[in-house]
Image (tube, rainbow, N blue to C red; front, side, top):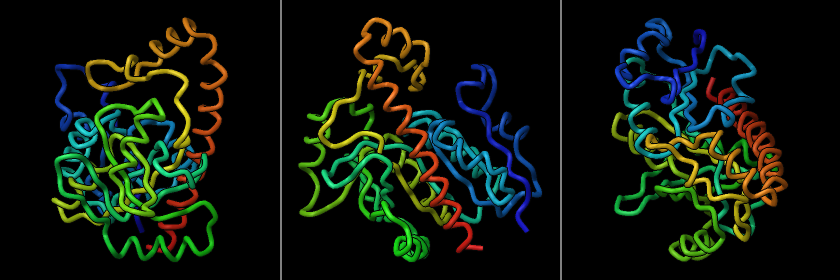
Length: 261
């Protein structure tokens, strides 16, 4: 039986003079080897699944971006060996067929300047069995970039690099999570939920609200929204979609875990 999950401390809560690995030592258990680790950049991406308090899962909130994801995941893996890693989160659509709330299970993860990383075959086979009974789940490609793609034009440029009929989405962490797992020989699967359509812009340029560590600062988003009241409707819709996406991701991971068990 897998033991009790403990959420790892978010990067932004660790002081500059505190070593990440030392902090993780305070938040993990030696007797918890074998849990399934669920990795996401943001707490709200994990929220629905964490609400279950399921002892099969450990949770790691890394902060936005590949650098934060790689650093946090490497530190966690230095302390535990999970049964599998599920990298989850929100993403923008790079295909017209994707709708808000749809789930993209990555066959492979791509980023500029690196070889693609293919998802663990056994976990893909489990996901394919689930797909037969689940609406809104498709298999495709994740494209990892350094900045939040806020404009439809940016998504169109990325989509031009896809092969014919490829289904894809864009995010900031998937390739980093996949590469760390592949290098460590840890089984992994990446799943992303669509928050913004291929043809739509985000209500704000969230890159302007990021801090030096790459994380989006809520107070900066609020300040930007107050300075641009027309964005508030779009932000509320994005929040609504995010809640749906978190629930959909949780449902997928629950079913994957049940099949793995």
